Image (cartoon, rainbow, N blue to C red):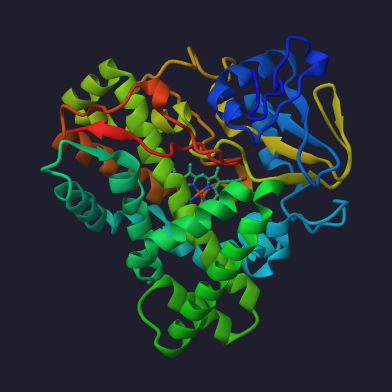
Length: 412
Ligand code: HEM
């Protein structure tokens, strides 16, 4: 298998395996590469720019262990890490967030917003999410085709998170550009220049938004956070800005992919689509299987070893990066029967799509609800939905952390 520059990324000889996680070739063949790695090299060395050494972990049990291991830090500024900081980490107005922190900062930051994302709070958004889904489908009702990503999967979650935060959802195309560049760029040197400009613009936007909420507070999440910040030392300026950044990015990058990848998986498996149409009560279970099958977050956030760790036969030295592949764990044959089959009636589906441990996804109840509502409205409204291009023509976005399609043309 070749990378984008024509070099081999997987060769027959294990010792020479050289995997380029940034190439679109890897994205395309990832599931078969993971399968080989799980069988032959479950803790595999990979090259990551700016990192001295990095390990890709692909077995379910190891991924769980790594996500829960307090000997790993999420903080790239930690003393254990040597070498220059990744460009994102240098931007403290974006990177001082809970996903890049360890306790006690992590605990304090998460506590400030977790009330807004409990299943009960999220259930209160059901009607509004239904309405958004229906309005978006009304807009394409008379067309023969649409791009499932552009016309539906992207606008739905971004409108929801913008309304929760209290920012104008009309700015969403701008967020997408900033957010896509920043997320796709993580550790990708060829894109660093583009990245700096997007970071500058996004940070400025956040600062202006915070200023406005300070002057004219409303009943929304940003106003409440601004209030906390002004009440004392619970939240610094950088933490406030980074929190909003994280919620915007995490609130839409991933859920777009749940709706897009979920739609694709159902279109690729007409028998499952038919079963779901005839038994809509299966939707909750189906969304869990779709999260497992094409996990929207492919690789967990970067972590570094604070001390030496032994995993299987491998010694992970202090300062090494550990990359846990959620996508691979979710296809591990030791945990899932026929893991490469899509089965919306699958029981005991303990997938890791939302992570594990203290960083378990804060937005999981919201993402689940959005996914269920989006997909059930879609298939009810367009029961004859079909792929608008051959499956071979579809392209995964070349994102290091995420799995999501660039476009998904469908016939209505
Ligand atoms: C964390 C997945 C939607 C907010 C995470 C993590 C995963 C994940 C895997 C843990 C990362 C790690 O430990 O390395 C997903 C998926 C989603 C989704 C698959 C959609 C299908 C959302 C939504 C929000 C959200 C809608 C809402 C704002 C967060 C936050 C964290 C997080 C704030 C950091 C939690 C912490 O550090 O304690 N998500 N997420 N996510 N997610 Fe989500």
